[in-house]
Length: 276
Image (cartoon, rainbow, N blue to C red; front, side, top):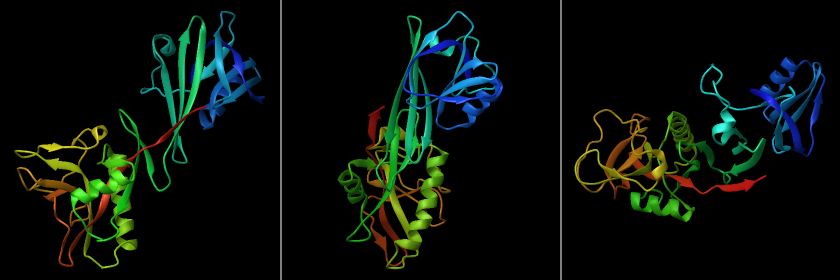
C-alpha cells in the first residue's frame, strides 16, 4: 500500500470499516477487490473496491489515503511513484486480468480500470510485453500430424503457435501434457508430443517464431544434447520421451510406429479487453 495525502472526489460506492487505520490498511492489502482505503478518523475508514473510485484530489490538510500497488522491494520508494508516470496494478482471478491504472495530473489522481479475459479452455498468463491466453489444441483426423498442420490448427482458433515464456508457463505445459496423455490417447501411443513455436533456419540454434511475445528460446528448457539438428526444416516439440523438456525433429514428422505421436499444438489465442 502507498499512503499519501488525498481525498476521494469521484466514486460510486464504498464500504465503511470501523477499525484503526493500520487495521484498515491490512484489510485492504489482504482483500483481492480492494484498491483504495481512505482514513475518515482514527477508528474508521472507507474501502473502495475495483472500479468504485475514479478520482482522488491531492490534499494539503493531512487527509490520508492509501492505494494498493506492487513494489518490487521491501523498501518504500524515495519519490512519489504516481507523479512521474502512470502505474498499473494487476491481479489475476478466475482466468481474468484486473488492471488498475493510476496517473496524476494538475492535483488529481485518476484511476482507470480494465479487465482482460481469456476464452474457455485456455489459461491466462502475464508476459513482459503482453497478456496471453494459452491452450493445447488436439488434431482430430488424423490424430497425429505435422508442424505445418499444428500451425494451421492454431490459426483456425484465432492464434499462433507459442512456447513457454517463463517457468509458470513451462510448468503449466508439463502438467497439461501429462493430463492429455491419459485422456487423449485412443491409439495407446507410448509418447504423445506437441508442437511448440520454433522453425529452424540455417545453422544451429537459429529459429524463427510465429509468436514474438515469448522471447524466442530464452525460456525453453532443452532436453540433454538438444537441439539435435542444424539447418532448415526442423521444428520444436514438447515433451521429449523423458516426459519433460523440449526437443527438435523434422517438421513433417507425424508418428513413429506405435511409439511417437505428434498429437497437437500449443497455441496462443486472442483475448478480450473491457474498460470498466
